[in-house]
Image 1 (cartoon, rainbow, N blue to C red):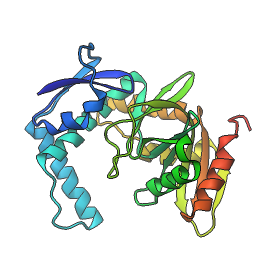
Image 2 (cartoon, rainbow, N blue to C red; image 1 turned 135 degrees about the vertical axis):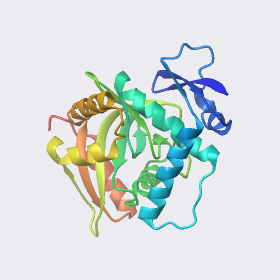
Image 3 (cartoon, rainbow, N blue to C red; image 1 turned 180 degrees about the vertical axis):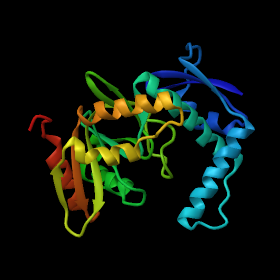
Image 4 (spheres, rainbow, N blue to C red; image 1 turned 90 degrees about the vertical axis):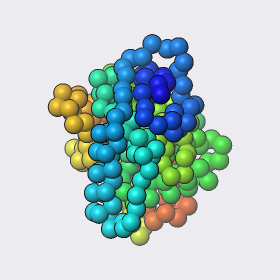
Length: 249
């Protein structure tokens, strides 16, 4: 089964073993467009994703959890897309990204910290002004003019995303804390988390491109660190600090 899609303004032809991944990507169809690149999935790819899933379950203490081939193929397709995207100035980041009044804010952190919870507080605070771009794995395209974040169908367990984009104003690293506090941070402090939360390709050339893109990204957007307790006040504090800040401050 073969279909063509547009992700982050890049046209990708996807040949799959199962149909489910095409249902997942339905809103991103680009019928008739000339592909920028093509990917194909084999049973070996599914077996590789199963091994990765089993290792992750073991590390996290999850017992007796198995994944269907349909779901594993969804992971395999996005992995192959992410491997190719650095050649187009684009990386996959693990984070929850919300746009307010046309500007995007991406929250990233170690798994389980509360990225989605914090983004939900922003939506509750700001109502219709806040639009969830992607709640789990957005794509970020970096150029000399800045960074743009794009929604994808790989959008977390709550399936919150749009097929749209917004200029990325800031990246905020979340940490759990008893008291809410936010501060600007420099590129050197942000870099380890940016590297950890960006998909790192297996291909050596693509990895070099990824490192160069992270270097460009950390200098293109505002960088913040937020200690938060997940009370509504955390969202108000973060929004008020980040909305009017200039990168040159």
